[in-house]
Amino acid sequence: MERNLTAEQLALFEKEFASTPQYRVMQNAVTETPIAKIALDRQIVTSIDHSVSNLLDDWKVTNQQKSGRCWLFAGLNLFRAGAAAKLGVKDFEFSQNYLLFWDKFERANFFLEAMIETGDRDVDDRTVAHLLSDPIGDGGQWNMFVALVRKHGLVPKSAMPETESSSATAQMNDMLRKLLRQGARDLRKLAGAGSGVEELRAHKQELLTTIHRVLSIHLGTPPQKFLWQWKDGDKAFHRDGWTTPAEFAAAYVTVPVEEYVCIVHDPRESSPTGKTFTVDYLGNVIDAPPVVYLNVEVDLMKQLTQDAIVGGEPVWFGCDVGKQMSADLGYWDANLYDFGAVYDTEFSLDKAERLLHHETLMTHAMLFTGVDLVDGKPRRWRVENSWGDEKADSGFWTMNDSWFGEHVFEIAVRKSALPAELQARFDEAPIVLPAWDPMGALAD
Image (cartoon, rainbow, N blue to C red; front, top):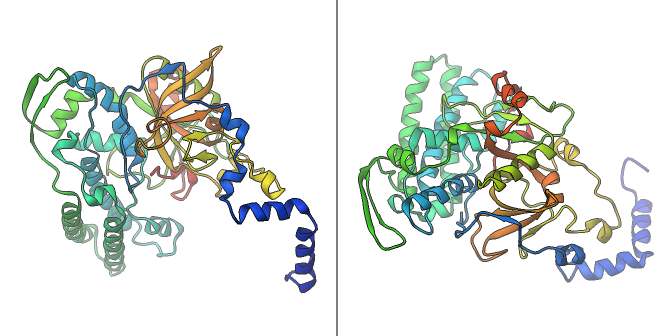
């Protein structure tokens, strides 16, 4: 093989392809039909249905529309069943737009503080470049969700409903990125000219004034107080009176959110099992507790998820959603598509190798709401997605257990559910991963 592609080599490649009837048949098929339809394993499809032995959901799914707010939706979906029961209504939604506003504003402050802190580094420094690559995307993590609820509380959807920009965030995000990168330039110039922290933060205040204005124009103004009243399922009228977001969260979040911890499965050799990790510059709220993960074996993650569901509680989780997924059917299976057979090749990277070689990371967060157990072992999982009710089982998807092990990365569970020795790990200083590590990926 030459360093360059020669005419002789190109001729050999073409001859090899043309001489194999299977390749020509696949060419005929794929040039006329989407590859996913050809590679779909019919035996797996016909073996799946949406039934499970342990089912929690008795509500309608939500819809994040054209936004990357899945982590907020999944977190609020965990809360809303308890709130609906307390309110005596069938379906209830907290305002996703309210948390979106505060996440954007807090994250702008977080980013600008990072620019102040790294102002003495070159703009091509890998951490600075990583921060500048996406200063204010939609995605997030469980701990970031908790930080928002702890600081800003919650409101019902009626108190801050959806807007055009909350349901389709691209244009708003584009404006925010421009402003934040421009602000980063200005802060870095001031730092380079010898300005102190006080002067830098005074300029940050000016930048945040503009950011707040942009967010208010796009998303509306978050209520500081609102009059909360409703009719229950029996048409009886109730009124709590004027309520703050903090008071509303305290009254209607029935889940002990402060007790939850993040568990991950990171099989890379560089990530020891049984240790806690954090990621540099991962977060949204300054001075909130850091994003901390405990790395465990995937079987323990499954057991914790199964136990929570059997105990009556859904489970927030993060995964690489697009792998081996049928959007039309609402199914996931580790071998749902046999792409290897179509191309006469192998796709052999395992989970650790996919992380190392940038082939996978967490991309989406959802809620486990059911599990199908056979002889005490999970066969499939039921998932509440936030993509509307038009697909799957009215928006509830089905995940075969094979997919869990390969593509689920993170769950949030009560700390008390862990073995005592693993609970103690959260008292240790976490290993700090660099800002660009794939375990710092944000679900959107």
